[in-house]
Image (cartoon, rainbow, N blue to C red; front, top):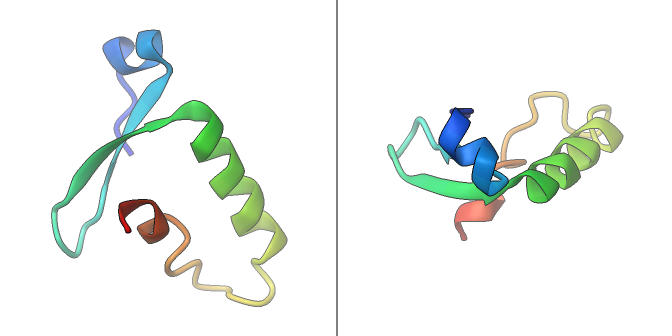
Length: 57
């Protein structure tokens, strides 16, 4: 994730997938939802794989 002044002013952060290099601006509310989801499911999926990849689909 890239968090910058301009993005924050717009209510966004940049998310980049390391595997593909694909980038996307994502709203702070969406990031908050993803983090809550990851926290709830950490025991089921300890690696956290796929949590953020879903926003690129």
